[in-house]
Length: 292
Ligand SMILES: O=c1[nH]c(=O)c2[nH]c(=O)[nH]c2[nH]1
Image (cartoon, rainbow, N blue to C red):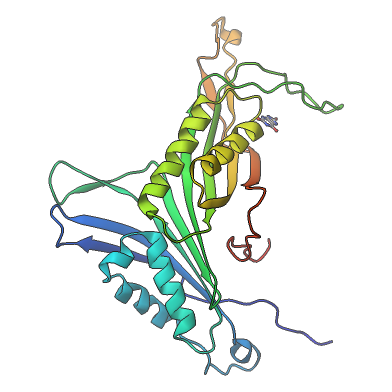
């Protein structure tokens, strides 16, 4: 029996970088978790242990911290990712592809010019993939919690002999949303664009009269594409965080949708892509992972 090497990539994952902009008054900071993955020309180390084509992950880590000195570049996760990805491919023989994934933890300024509190509303993400000619820039958000106390229905669904769910025309609906959107241009004010997407998603989710979580999420994605022409495609992963009306009738207490059990698992999971009908193919924009 013979074995062949399939897709492989390697890199330094989760480099935690905090950059302080001391020259700005008041001080600014960015807080990143940067993961680098490189591929191309790496048969020898896997098959024979010959490390001559390997740029050590330790060197990759050092590069992340060194480039964090470049003010304009490091200020936004997208521009930092572009800088790093192009460097690793353009300056390192035999690397052909780089993917840099950055999580950004937002901090909010306190009352004085050099103190901050971690803003736990969401994590901002950017994933940049570069193949030596094309650069794919994907921005995103994770752990964006949204909850609405009414304006949500779920009825008229398929029923079979295992169905026990009662249809409802008024329920509490909640999620912790993950979304990633692909820009077809780099001529973007990354910070403003990100703020706008988050705002659009929050407003749409909140204002939408929902017949299903699926419908609300599609509308959120469509609203983002409507607002921002440079975004070609958005992918959303959203658990339906079930809240069950707690049975207080057992104690002779009325509960008209006021006391809920916030269930942890299992949860419904809606995953969808919304794209412009004339959008180009996304190529390597979205990380398929190892497929499990
Ligand atoms: O919005 C919903 N979509 C579903 O597919 C579903 N399934 C379910 O049990 N509850 C819900 N709610």
